[in-house]
Length: 283
Image 1 (tube, rainbow, N blue to C red):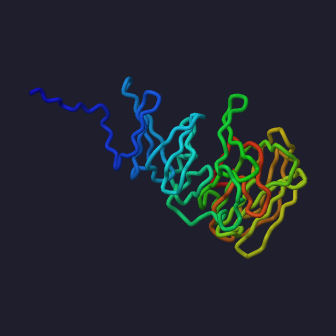
Image 2 (cartoon, one colour):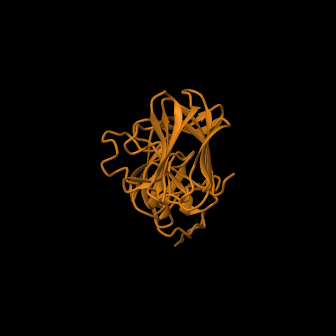
Image 3 (cartoon, rainbow, N blue to C red):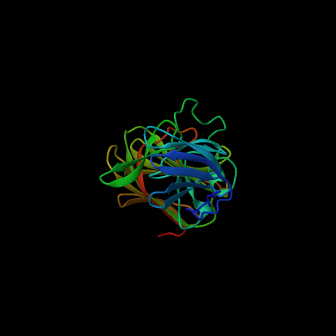
């Protein structure tokens, strides 16, 4: 009798391996407890892994190259080229989620309140799509129900911050760019486009709402660089280097999530976003 001795082809110790799928010459599988998605190509021995935003039990391929991922929080649209989570060297507590809930990604906090009778009923997907423009990646928001969610304290409630990004709205409509809040109420900064101009409010710890109605134009169908700065002296907004400020000396009203693209009762953002950058100081 000849005995066949198994050979180890991948010394990967998954905490709970599941959902094996042979697809396009490679083995796809998940590590449920390890919060990973893996792709192993036996021909080359190459392994590629992605961080999962929640526990994922299976993958199902789609015609567009994406996968449906069966996750603890629901069915997710997984794009191997980009993923559904924005990682940062600051660590898991500051990972951002394309749609969904950051508490499932970071383990911190409650829901972002979008689903407390404030989210549109007929929505195809909540995650903005990865697209490429002039060779550079960006996120495309549909103006209906797509958003990017930053976890609590990505914009610190009791500290200075500078946030910058490029946006390209697809129309001149009034729309929300971002709002910081929790459980259905604003707890910090909210930024919108109103009448084609940048508009912001800040809810402070003294329960006052500070308003900054600027004359800084954010035109449709072209890229604009936006900078938001707060450092307990004033709140400053800038568009393509032109600035507007208002006095603001108190910290934010409370800890909150920051949702980009969806503003609760405000119109949703339609357009593209790129080059998102946040530091916890006043640059």
